[in-house]
Length: 159
Length: 200
Image 1 (cartoon, rainbow over the protein chains, first blue to last red):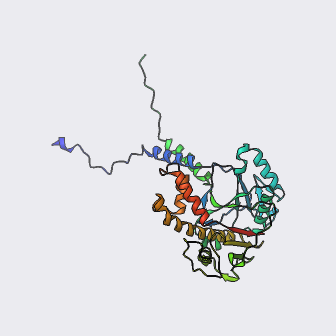
Image 2: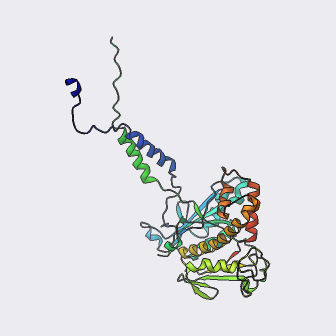
Image 3: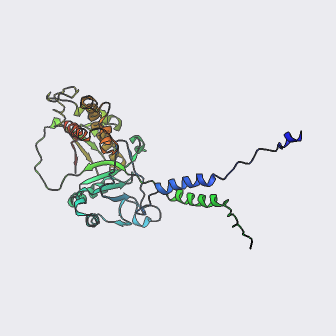
């Protein structure tokens, strides 16, 4: 009889955690691949508005970013009005044209006409500064622009 | 000497190490937004503005308090899309055989002549401006999608609206005839040209 009584009726068998590292590694690789390290650290608030008629920004062509928004906490000494940020620092309006020419000089010549300027503007900024920047871009003939937005319903922009 | 096997390395803490890395990447990840509304700015050189009949211009004014004035009338943003579609699709002179509009003689002649003029003030908020831009682009997209579904089937692109056509054209895995698709996209773009002018 003892032959059939080998199994002790203990509690539940312990769940093997041997595959836990595999699962975690899988997640880890996903995030490593999906991560884009920020090119610029932002010194301004940059909550983008949303729109639903958006097109994907074509990454095959060169893209330059211009950020606008009011200085975030820690940079209050720069005022509470929306400001321009180019690369890593605050910039004045007159520096926009120099920024575009430096971006262009880093490109191969045949790509220059395809340079797209992505405007990342905080939703609370007003159109005055955006209009000024657009005017500067026209002066240096950088005419392809993209109002970068999130994807969503425009109703949520208004509150 | 007796052959000793190497002691097995305890792998129990591997999960902890992986978790540590995982949490680091979770925290530092910012998925960059890379979508938006593409626009082309007008070139700087002054050209004599062509004379345009008042009825062919759809004026949209967004004031500093984010209030919307469309054709001299106050309007909510939710109604803008429909009003713009009605204006573009009006077909006042009857020359547009693919329009379904009311043929109102006081509104635009045909989609080729119809121009939307957008004016904003310095105090206008960017969010409101983007909302209006979005609605105007949506109006064009509605008409283009409608046209794409009408003529797409006869060109071998059944059940595909304009947005899908554009997406397919860019998609490397699309198996259809890309040259024909490109011709069709260009034709629809010409039939409903996006004439959106911004007043400085």
